Length: 374
Image (cartoon, rainbow, N blue to C red):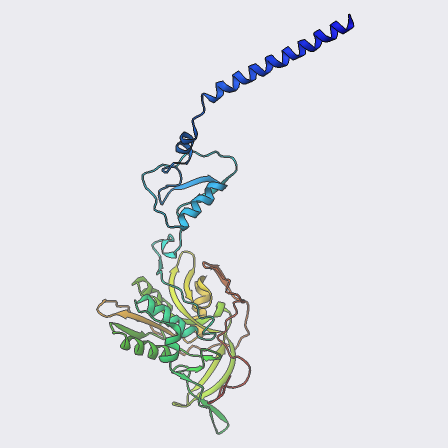
């Protein structure tokens, strides 16, 4: 009797399992009828004309994997269609991606009391560790349409002197940094001011077809520089690296005139590219740091201390006219010690493989004399 009951129980379990299997198979077949074949899946989910093709100004939210795909498409330069709308994407696990990428300061919003002139930046390093002046001229000439090269300008156009030192009545006489670059822009030296760069600019332009006039506007009030910017003319000018205090280094007398010359460390040259009066900022195209903003009052102070040196290059026949508000260019420079840079904002990567201490200074305490080798 017990044996019969056991057999009936086993048969019952088998029947139940078999029935469950049949039901499962039937349900699975029902779902298969609603799934498209492989070709339909490809057309539905991976066809062209989805979010891979977006208007250039669209801003969309994509999943991480789709973000990578969009980035790859942009890098390859694939064209995009302005007529295709972005597909709906789940809000879970998303990364925001904007198709509007501002790569130039020319796109920045400025109010009516601001100006910015967009131009290429050229860095002085590594070839010209103390050549900020001739590199700034390279930036300006390239903005004017010349295919200028900083090393060509430094070798063939920049008036250079090792000082031609002589000694008379207990005084040291050397050539003037207003007329020559004292030292070697490829290695070490003092630097130069507007007169030397004016000569280099005139020589280069004469050798490359002319069409431009170089104006040495040294001694001009800062407002004159801003007037030139408002007329779409950038200004090559001098202040100090990082707007730190100039530091007295050496006195000598000009070989040509006998005038006393005082050299201060931290001298630096760049192109004044913009101003924002509402924010009290100036924008500089800096051969050492890239495109960078500084407080306008600090800039004007350092510009005064560096003898208000400035140059503009104006296209012939452009009709650009700026009223000169010149004051005494021989501004007394206080004997002060260097302080930390006063940078407000920086708009380009500041990673050139070394710290950003200005190299435009004396390399070592020895005097530069004619024939010195480094």
